[in-house]
Every structure is written in C-alpha cells, then in structure tokens.
Length: 172
Image (cartoon, rainbow, N blue to C red; front, side):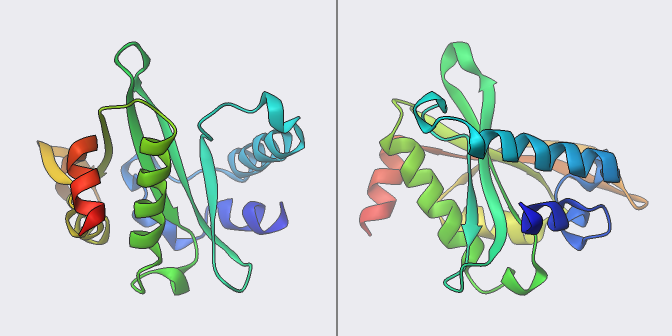
C-alpha cells in the first residue's frame, strides 16, 4: 500500500480538516494504519465484514486520492457513522467527495437494514458541510464551541439522512 502509506504521513494537509483538534498522527501511527490495511487486504475476502468498513476513493486514472469509512456509533441500535477523507489536495473541490459520499451512502443503505446514516464534522470544515447539504443530509446536531483548534472555538456538527429521504433524494 505505498500510496496509502504515503498519504497517512503527518505532513499532509488533509489532517487540517479531518478532526485536526485531535492532533496529527505520528509516523508510527501512519505505519500502523497502513499495516492494518495491508492485513485487511491480505485476508480471505469471505472473512471480511459485510458491509465493507471502508473503500478507497480512486480516480479514473487509478490513483488513490482518499477513502470512505463507517464505524458504529451504536451497534445495539444499528447506528452507523460514516466518514470521508480526500488525501490528495488535487481531488478537492471538483466533485469527487460528493460523488464518493453519495456512492458510499447508497452502498450502505443497499447492504444494511439501517434506518439512518450520519457523519460528524466541525464548523471549520466548510467543504464537508457543503457536501452533506448538497447530498440532502440534514444538520441534526450542533455542539457549540466543542472543537477548539488554532485559537478558534468551532462547533461540532452531525449531519444525517434517513433511508426514505435518501431513496427520495437519489431518484431526483
């Protein structure tokens, strides 16, 4: 996973929008993340969890530029929280993130019985907020001044979509 390992390094700008208030990973963190992905890829496909927990975001030129993921907010209630990150600055602002999140949302609704999906971000990540709104996600929660970073108190935000809203929106 040389491309993936490269993008995990702490000096890349995507760390400035992907939960920057948590701090940048160390080189060891980046290498550990890459090793986890290598183990996942090497595993027997029949043993991988369904639905997939992550997928690469790849351009038409077969270049990895980011990833989409999900994790349990509450497994007992089948509440999944999604995420997307575009590592490569050249992939931002051209619709790749919107397309990837739309495809990921469709995939998760098609392969689960989940009633809702959401993602969390912060008010300083204006691009992610715009992607969510563009795709029909609704701002469901705002935690005021919850994410201090670089001397600014940002709000923590959660955007969500219900299955029936997504079905209606994706037909339009």
